[in-house]
Image: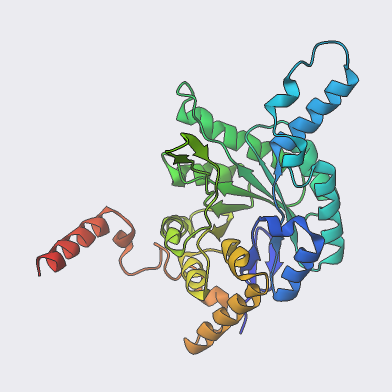
Length: 334
């Protein structure tokens, strides 16, 4: 059984990757993920605000007493809100890269070019085998056009690619007016992989206290459908690798993502819910299913349900939507 796959130029023993999460804030956890069978680990994210906080704090101490700083530091989250500052992040990355045999991928999360270039280089020097860019940008300004938003993403991708020699993955949002065109633009900008899709935090309300509730729900298996659609549509049409993320709780989601065309399948929620050792279960489930269905390799399975390879390509488009509605109405009438 050949489970090997290639992801943004990295040769992995199988397609199951531990995605960015608090679990990777500890080197021992990263080693446990490797021992449990992870083919690669994406580090928890280093946030742009942390870099800006560090820069602002340095400016504060360098200009102390000049009255030029005022409340600048209050614009950033407090230092204790971060689990790891930039230097500690690089230290964890360095120690993990030295102690693990699997690829360790750094993660940068932000919205501008500020600080990213230097820290991308620092991650490379610390031993990262790749970098995942997570542009967590919600364009709430009604004066910013869609084109400006797209250009922000493309510029960041190009600048980071030019700064490092290791592969760069881009965690793409599903909220572009043309996801396929944006994927093509990033592909042409040189990114080595696209990870579909970023999950944005969505606020909830406490109606009694009239406060915004800060909570993050784990993903659900039903959320894979949007990702399946776009991976299946992009497969074979861009050079960049395709990474699938969100909703992975069993071999079923892994197989669906692979059949759509994903090169790797990333999971976090399942590990937070079931523990790191669950990685072993996922690999065993995948292997058993492939044996039962007489697949000899992941490559044989990959992309077999993409739009290019299914018998009816319109099943991914508007025609299938009409069929679904017609079938539902017929069954409802019965």
